[in-house]
Length: 294
Image (tube, rainbow, N blue to C red; front, top):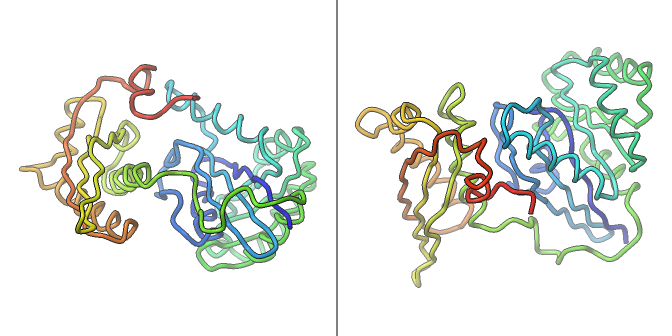
């Protein structure tokens, strides 16, 4: 049997989390069209009869402008050095640049077995795919490139087989019924943050943290959940709440439905919006909200 860890690395919004979710067959990480959606390293575990792949979904590579983003980039760099293989995800729809090749070569220099997944090929002209792969090789990329579409399921089996070939022989790292290393409480907070990313524009979603205060399962199977949505400015709070609370009610309703689907039970959700000025640059608050290198 083969078993090992695979760091999933790439630029922000390259489709890493969507790819991991589809490969694992479960929603492990939240997704949105906005960069910096993934803030933590999240493990998604795929177990077959002959192998187990523990995907480590990492924050998208992004030029940092605050302490939180800097922490996210360190998380990605650390993950790339602690795994058995690297899957570099490149957004095919965005086109290929020489700077992409240089970034890939940076991770190849770690001498960790590596593959490149060329994503979103379902929304790009087919003739551009071989051209892009050729360009990467001409710029010096040595890793094999696999054009895939997570949405259409294209070439995912071939990619999966290629990943397995890079892993060492060994016993499974996790029990076969485990699909993530993250708790239900963590996922509930992430589902709330996902809906905020989808509903609100500009800087507001990126300045939001979710703090779960109550996560209790009652005897009848229903969950009682209360959480704080923490933002950075008073005017952001007003926008999050909306006129007569309409915006936050709608967002919370969407989040609650996804929480119920995820937990398989009724959810009673209470939401509060609070302000903590510039928390993304305040280490103590970042740690309180679950963002630290520990």
